[in-house]
Amino acid sequence: MKGYHIAVVGATGATGTELLRVLERRSFPVASLRPIASARSAGKLVRFRAIDKSSAFRMEAHVPLVIPEINADDLRQHRGVIANPNCTTTVMLMALYPLHRVFTVRRVFATSFQAVSGSGARGVEELQRQIAALATASPSHGRQDRQVTPELYPHPIAFNLLPHVDSFLESGYTKEESKMEEEARKIMHLPEFQASVTCVRVPIYRAHSVAVSAEFEQPVSVEQAREVLAKAPGLELVDEPLSNRYPMPLTVSGKDNCEVGRVRRDCALANGLSFWVSGDQLLKGAALNAVQIAELL
Amino acid sequence: MKGYHIAVVGATGATGTELLRVLERRSFPVASLRPIASARSAGKLVRFRAIDKSSAFRMEAHVPLVIPEINADDLRQHRGVIANPNCTTTVMLMALYPLHRVFTVRRVFATSFQAVSGSGARGVEELQRQIAALATASPSHGRQDRQVTPELYPHPIAFNLLPHVDSFLESGYTKEESKMEEEARKIMHLPEFQASVTCVRVPIYRAHSVAVSAEFEQPVSVEQAREVLAKAPGLELVDEPLSNRYPMPLTVSGKDNCEVGRVRRDCALANGLSFWVSGDQLLKGAALNAVQIAELL
Image 1 (cartoon, rainbow over the protein chains, first blue to last red):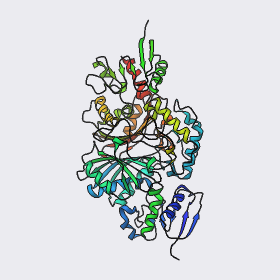
Image 2 (image 1 turned 135 degrees about the horizontal axis):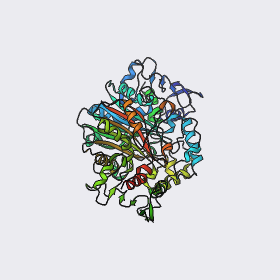
Image 3 (image 1 turned 45 degrees about the vertical axis):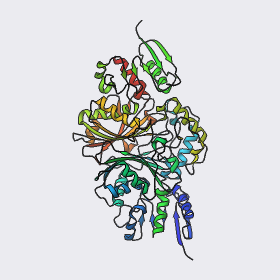
Image 4 (image 1 turned 135 degrees about the vertical axis):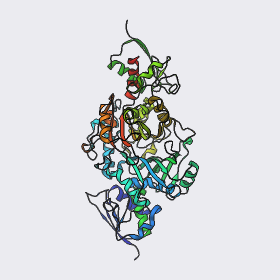
């Protein structure tokens, strides 16, 4: 019988659920499927064949860190373990890398807007519970949030923003912010690449968005950039601001492709572009990317 | 009888309501108060003595654009009209200007997270209505937002993000983004200052936040920056990330002072700092700033 024996750890979590859906939707040849629920790893960790979605092995030299549209060739060097990048890194690179290939990126200034499902099913439940408790409260002073008790996050997330994703490092950056730079360097094979990142958890259920200012070595025009982005695999150019068309969590949720828009000349960089990219972090940011890697193997 | 005759246009709007509260709280000498409700300007326009909170006159050369903590001296040149800056500009400058005075700012890369009350009472009502309709819907695909019909904003704002504040310009920037640069130049007397800004409307009721990467002419250390920020008027340094203390809409709502935190060396700029600033845009961003100007006059 043709097909693969697959074990999904954390199959009942946010990413695990999506992974099972993606396998079915793409008719992946599955001989046997063994969902392994794990309280600790639920929604956090999915091992797919040997594909590790956790952050444990991402930065190890012999472990390829792969986004198939970008560095599929790196798969050849694997020694059993392949890592799936951080979901916010993936969403940013789906738009940045096609531009890099043509104009050569030097550095970016990026701010992320991250949905609660990035913390797994518990993040979704936490926002739902707080919203239900506060839905009918009067927001006159914006203070009604104080009535809810956070469990997963250190502060209420409903009607609030947390400039805090993952734990803090000595440098003042969070691990999440630091990963965006380190993983982007590895995936793009650009050890000198610099990324100044602020990651923020926002009270939305699904899809991550990133506001990016990028500096390139080559001169770049908005028209050229739009052409490049329109042709990039896994990406849709949604950029008709005068018709109120731009990427949003609302439109990108449940979609395989990421969306990029708000493309404009960066007014504080010589060869610079600003843009806004959104992607479903459970699909392209996690489950879909893992299945795409498995399809290539 | 001592005191001033005051007319508040749009007194029933979001800013108007706060303005009346601030006048009372600060015991401003009021001889007569005439609230003028206007359907068109509700929550948008407040004329206070001669202080104009709308954007109509801000950039005219003979109209001082004033944040009392920064450029109170500019009030001397007024010819009857004084303008109150855009609320997002004010929140950013409350942290940026004290740093500029010591280290001389060149440019910033900034991303704003703006509450719906920045659109006035109608913004608050719109989010409330959508949240009430969606509070019990299942967020499994993040798609439940489709069930609500937007009225004020072009798309649903509940559980969504709009990279769209104010109207779009030919350049691809919005007016709001462009104002942040132009108004900052005027207020800081820095015609060469560059600000690359992305403004985003987020589903929270109150307080604006801005993630800022700033480049300075002088070398700057995190320790020096924290010292400067801790002493700055109208600002509180909330920066103990390991104890989960950082500025948030939740803590800054209803507060006169802005909060700054997440201060760290910017890893993509030579003399650079990254920080996160939050402020109640109806108080320091609007009503409080206007009353402070009136107190100086």
